[in-house]
Image (tube, rainbow, N blue to C red; front, top):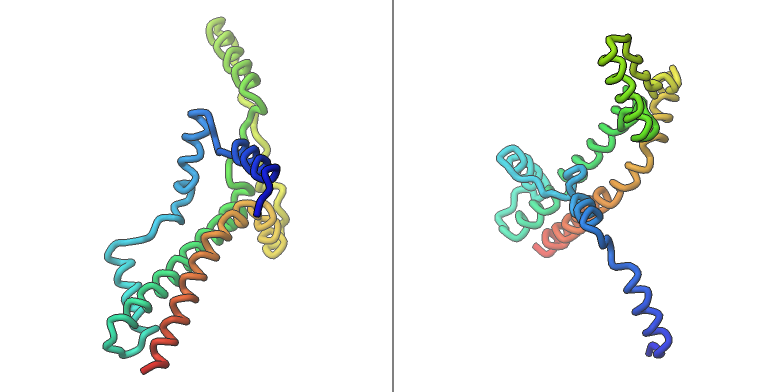
Length: 190
């Protein structure tokens, strides 16, 4: 049983970690699951066709509606797993080609950007030659030349994003594996 001191400490910690408090923070947090769309379950004719085909392969020629339903859930997990892995491969390919996920900004701060823009406006008003826009460093130039080293460097650069996607990959694999085990148990009872 928790002591009064522990209960007070738990309440104090809970009060500190209540999530975002500002409107901007709440708005940003509300968009977390929409960043890549992997939390959304797929639907549609093509997905249904693929799921049914895979479910019938998994279940074999059975007449049991329960086995088919479990096979459908396993197939859905397998298709979701493939979708997450394809998304991860796409991130690595994008970095392999461009050198980064987000293009670099030519200005380090908003103040630098405003200063440059105002200088251009002043030059245009005086009919002078406006200052040229800074050219950002191309991140792809810093990638190695050999394909194996280039892919390894691209993977290293995108690793934080890949780690965030592990949750979705693990969830899909768990759903698939759990339902396959259930399907095996159901089929072994027959």
